[in-house]
Amino acid sequence: MTRTRAEQREATRRTLVAVGRRLFSDKGYAAVGLAEIVREAGVTKGALYHHFDGKAALFRAVLEEVQQEVATRVAAAADAEGDPWDQLKAGCAAFVRAAADPEVQRIMLVDGPAVLGWNEWRAIDEAASARHLAEALTAFAETGTIMPGPVAPLTRLLSGAMNEAVLWLARPESGPDDLDATLAALSRLLEGLRVRT
Image (cartoon, rainbow, N blue to C red; front, side):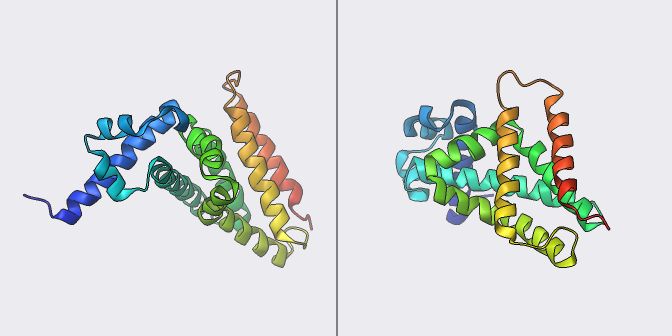
């Protein structure tokens, strides 16, 4: 069965993103050249430039894919819980678990801000996950589950704390118990926000 041109183009794009993802996660963005990407993908530079403006644009597509996968894992963990507070806790824990993967760390938290710049990286993060965290916190503030007040700074504080925890887990001396300790600390942090009645 022969593929249409549109199917061939989409297959080429998927291959470029997959190869870029593997190379960026293995070596880091700075150590990967376009020649290596097209060679590994089995395409020409022209084919790459047909889909992406260059290496940074390919990296952005990889980052968006990684962010979306993490967001899907977070949503699945949250959806598995019936109580909204348990959904928040499960979603935050799922984020830390997913982002603790070295591939995700390098692409999403190390190279992402460095390659795309802080503002563009934040916009992608906002679209993928921070928006959902803000929505949950807003609902909790409105129902009195957490103290009323501005949600935007709290969202940034929690998001930053989770990102920092994941980067801390990535350090070479990190031990096997550090993930569990981080998840326990995150749970305590979240419970500290909850208003007890």
